Image (cartoon, rainbow over all chains, first blue to last red; front, side):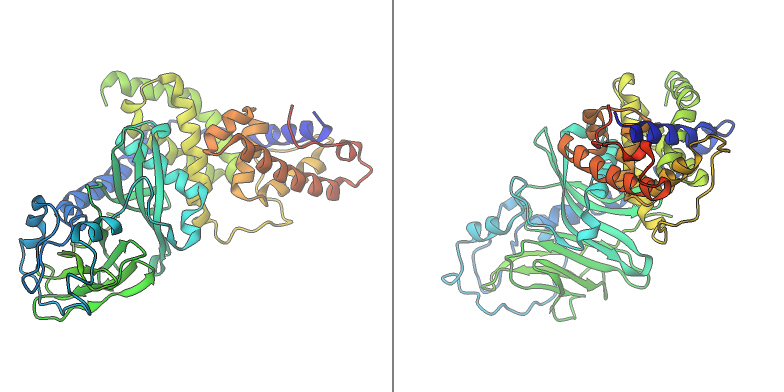
Length: 285
Length: 179
């Protein structure tokens, strides 16, 4: 031990010595806990409301044009066909001979928890300390040991109007269960806006976040996909979404939310996924 | 939460709040921020109380939440926080002969990145081992060593500036690793 070791210890203890806890902190703690619980409940409700979308986002497209074979597991048909889809312009190359086999095409773009998509977006949103906090929050909400949880960042951004960091994540558990979601950094700590089990073949994660003026549709998918299109309603033509990074796209939510849709295309133009855009969610303040 | 668990939590808060507040104060450097940080931390512990299976693990859990909440999300609130030559508020009066050196160390501590500051507080105030510090920070023991070493180099440089190179307390070899 060096003399400065002693001085440092002494300085820290001296500074801390006269810090005393205020009277009974329990009331304040309970109030804060109620506030945190309300926010988490809002996130859980939002996640529940998105259940269909959460399933839909991981389901390969089942609707094709021109009499092509439907692809993907049959169980996936419901989310893709329970709403009227807008007319979507065909991709540049829809011939089956030019595209890989449907099952291969879909699975090759799907999120593999063992080898996730690379992180894209703002590097400052995924720094170690923040990821630790998100991980602790996730483990706390789920009542599992932090040692059994690994949170993998997929995309991060700072929502400029409120300067709020937002993170799309994958959670790998020691149990083998995998989850995905969207977390937001708040002054009282991390909040999980969306938190849902990761289905079997997650081709794309589609998230609708409430904005200051209009909702924002965020799609996170493999960096190797081709175009991602959004159609506001059945009367609107699908248009490519704005690219934030390879495989990460955004668009303002417009039109009729019951009939809007998102379509993910492979580079060759074959349709990998078509789903309804989810309804916007936000943290309850 | 059932009444017994509620009582357990109350007892924990009563017993541990003073010490946790002191740690929070050393992490934040501000009394009000420390109280806010501690309240948020304990509220999270309150919500997780029924799920914390081993009561012996509560301290470790709470400490981890405290540090991680501070190192991550207080960054946004403190976006305008900068190292300064003006001393922040004092917890109490300092009438020891080491006042200048302690002041210099405290000022230098305020200028450290939050992870470095947390490592220093955990190692030198909480007297945690490197392994325990690594557990709290969620990093490897090697990272704790390097983080602490960098922090101490900066503190030592600041202390030297304050006390002068002839001061035997700071001029002696300093290996960056607490005993």
